Amino acid sequence: MLNFTKFERINPEKRDVLQRLKDFDEVYQVFTKQRATEQADRCMQCGDPYCHTGCPLGNYIPAWLKQTAIKNPDLAFALSNETSPFPEILGRICPQDVLCEGACSLNTGHGAISIGAIETHISEDAFEKGMKPKFAQEKNDKRVAIIGSGPSGISAATFLLRKGFEVEMFERADRAGGLLMYGIPGFKLDKTTVDRRINWLLEAGMKLHLNCEIGRDKSISELEKEFDAIYLGIGATASNKVKIDGEDASNVHFAIDFLTGIQKRNLGNKNVEYIDVRDKKVVVIGGGDTAMDCVRTSVREGALSVKCLYRRDEKNMPGSKKEVVNAKEEGVEFVFNVSPKSIKVENNQAIAVELLETSMSEPDSSGRQKVVINQGSEYFEDADIVILALGFSPEVPAFLKELNVETNSWGGVVIDSSYKTSNKKVYAGGDCQRGAHLAVTAAVDGREAAKAIIKDLL
Image (cartoon, rainbow, N blue to C red; front, side, top):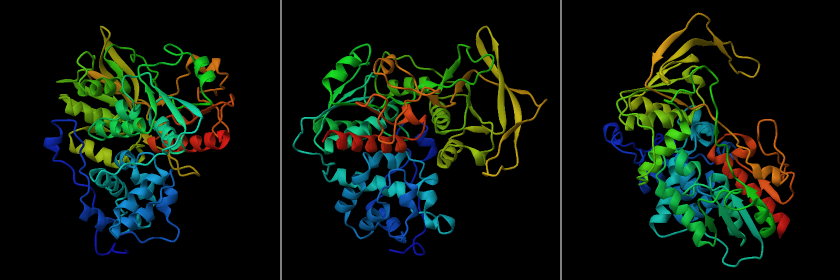
């Protein structure tokens, strides 16, 4: 260990940009054993590891880095899976630069440990050898229904199955995975990786009901009678509008509709309608990871030009920095410090976005800078397709009222410290109760809610 002066930080290799623009295959390559060992050997094994506290899951990062460095991969795999429901997925999609790697003690000088890449390597190396995550062999008589198959639902199912619970998952879409399946493009997360985790849950005894919408295909009263507990992992799937004139034009689309249609087509669905951006001038409004997914998908789809409009400067973008770098490499143009005022429409077709230039205020006491509109700075950006990537809000399905589950002013499910809702048989976690956030925080909620259910029912 302590070889951070001998080995510099190295990121996973990326496929050549001209090659990766031809398909939706993953951009980053998995570390080799030698590279993972060298990079793990850079860890200082801090007495107070900030990477551990910077990880929402509290992963035992220094422990599995050490085991990787000393070439004990089986223990590294066990440690990696102990706290995380799907480390090989989060290693790929987590914004490590603002979480574990951002908190790494080496980040200020020598370069943070390549934690995400090593995390991915540990699992993929183990899977190649035939290893699998472990689940309880004997079942208890407790039954839990999970509504939603996204990261929160998968996490809850994982930790419940480890304790021998009977788990049934209900998903209204045609495939399991939620945003992992349809909200994140394949160039960031290959869908076989998601399917593999779902299949292991099925092998462990989970029952999966696809194309099953609660309240339509199965009543919530049935679930309440049949199960000892219900976990709501329904996410936040209602797209936010920008609330300006012209946003209802026929060629203005929500990010999730754009991404889902393309992903379904890529998975072989020949009947799906998708938004065709080939040879079009595409404008994406937003600056988070979903916006990056949209612009990077657009260039792969053969758009004539792709512009990302964001109201703050680049330093204040909420998305992962590596995604911005990748988008720039792939030909995306960024227009910073602009705020949409209206969308110019002719014959129900958007033809341009009217923008106001902005500037950033001086930082307040918390260090936060506010957006200041520069009055009189209006101008237009031409557009054939406008995609709104402005975040998501929770839906409020009718069955929540039937369950007597309380929601707050913005539609979020209200829970207590044990993830219980106002119906003591119903638990909730992930975006439906915290608002749109990260896959890793949804995974935390699923794990902690599962622990609460286990404690209450056993």
